Length: 470
Image 1 (cartoon, rainbow, N blue to C red):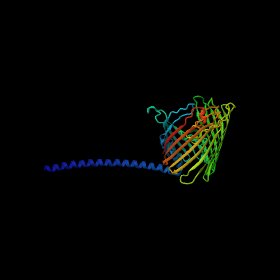
Image 2 (image 1 turned 90 degrees about the vertical axis):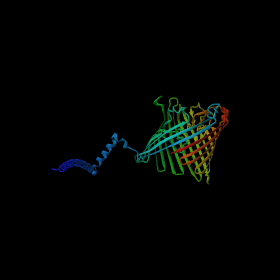
Image 3 (image 1 turned 30 degrees about the vertical axis):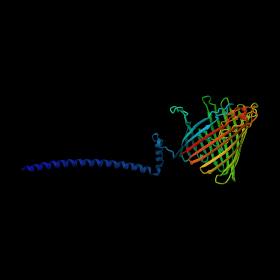
Image 4 (image 1 turned 45 degrees about the vertical axis):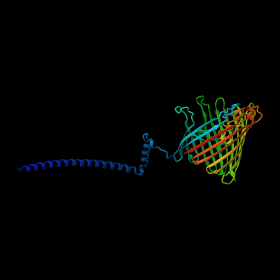
């Protein structure tokens, strides 16, 4: 047989063998794919069967139970989220310069003093449910350079507010608030967060409030101080309730009762404060009236104190909308510390810095303050005010008290009760609705009482504040 025929047969046999092998491999591959497709079809049918079960009306409860079981599992805690969260905050800087820092001594310190205070706040307002809200605000207040070294700052940040609101409680329209929060009532004569202060006030406790028609009701219980290190009963608590009637947007009439129960060992006190409040405006006029009385016990003395605050103002027409006003506040003092009665008025937690002068050298306690105001707004972004105060003691046998309600000087034998006069000039300029500047200058003219009881230097104070809300 010719060699070429033999070669052809050999080559053809080899090619046929290779084609047969490739065919076998392809067939095996197709069988594997078919097996997978069959398994997948089986799984799909199984899932469709389960889905058809859960889609029936009879299985709704089973489905809800299954979902609840998943969310209650610790592995799924992360799915619990608020319906909405709003984040905000504030950065506030204030630079101050003062020539006399204190009048507590007969020879006041006249060393010039300047410093810058910074307050920074961050908050989160979370809507947990339709009628449940949670609010948390942290705060850092500091004087620039207070640490001496930037590596030694071990304090500063604290909880300013942290509370939960249960709204429309039991369908009543009332809200129950519990936690730590700011308080403000009416014109802040007696209850104020004192936002001017670098820290400002916040109260721990429970507050219920709600508006029913024309009546707004407040009722609260608050722990003011608690020192279990000394004594588990060494605490100070505040209980209060207030009713406000507002027949329209121009007038309001209110009444409130406060009870302070202080058990501090050496200065126990249990006294009540009853106040009536009225405020409104009509035909360019505005008015405010607060009448306050106190009774109870203070260090085994019978409390019997009174206070009054009256303001009447008038706003003129025109582009500047100028306003003039007269303000008089009086708070009783004790004319005889030995007669068993305590007649020095306690204004609780007031906004004294606003009402009794920016210098904070006079408090709503044992004294008269007569103020003349002039305000104007040349534009929507600019406002200024000039106020002139006259201060007199109510009883010279009592002390001169500052805005912190602590005695500054006490000279029962003083012949004159005139403390002096204060001039306050301030102006605000809004760079935007969220960013504004506030400037102020104040001067104190000492009166005969200050001259009679020690040195009487005048005081100058200049300050500039920048506030940015976000």
